[in-house]
Length: 340
Image 1 (cartoon, rainbow, N blue to C red):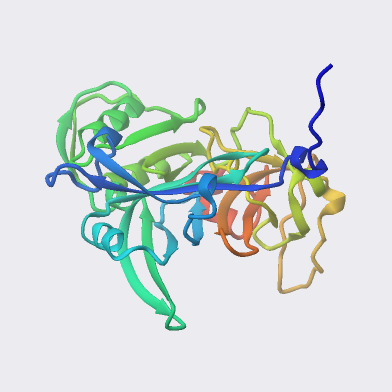
Image 2 (spheres, rainbow, N blue to C red):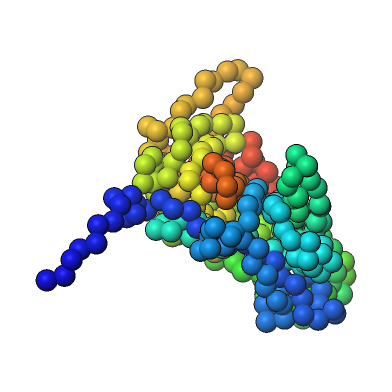
């Protein structure tokens, strides 16, 4: 006969017990640029880890991910680093990785991006704070250049090869199967920013281009997701407070969930019971998008907010119905969609 060890009832709960790890990558070679992401070329400095919580430094973060071709600004603040570690990060820190979630629930990498600017400050004369300002995919999309002539029949194949041949190569991770691919009669010369050619393709094909996590996604304006939606609900489903109907679609807050993505790699859908959503008061001057009849919504934006020594440990979500209605969703509509 074996004795059963009594464990607290809450240990089995899905969303109990925070878990995190924050790492800084420092290049081993001085000739590596921020755009190169071969992890074997870096040394990883773990600055805070929940597995040794008694020694883990306090970290606050606000990580933005929005699915359109504008830079996503994020901030990760690390408290009371040793002077030696501060100097290493200030002089050589290249990328920051944030893993977060729960011991028994969703846990994974929520951020991996180059450091744009480190800022040192002091709080209340006691705490030193190193804030890492990061811009997701900025160097690949906006500080990049391509200069090449390619001869291919399919326009989509041409874009994929153009991305590989750019000065800072990047990955086109997803192209919707419904995207039209024109047949090209002659060779195409690329000279300039890759983002300009991607934007032209979006206007011609009625698609939307997103740059997230150093990868590019090309999706239809109307939702082309085929994967099952992630079901969210109060309690075990993680919803905090009451979801709101807005001019953009809906907004809601959930306990921090690393499974939330804009693309995975297809456009991600979430499912919510419409009866849980607070309907907005309609006025003549404000037009609100309608709620989805199936309660299925397309994720347009996520903001992960956390404090390893505070109360914040949430994911704020902006989503719209599958018909892509609402002011924010209208940013995705191209000239081709308007003419239909």
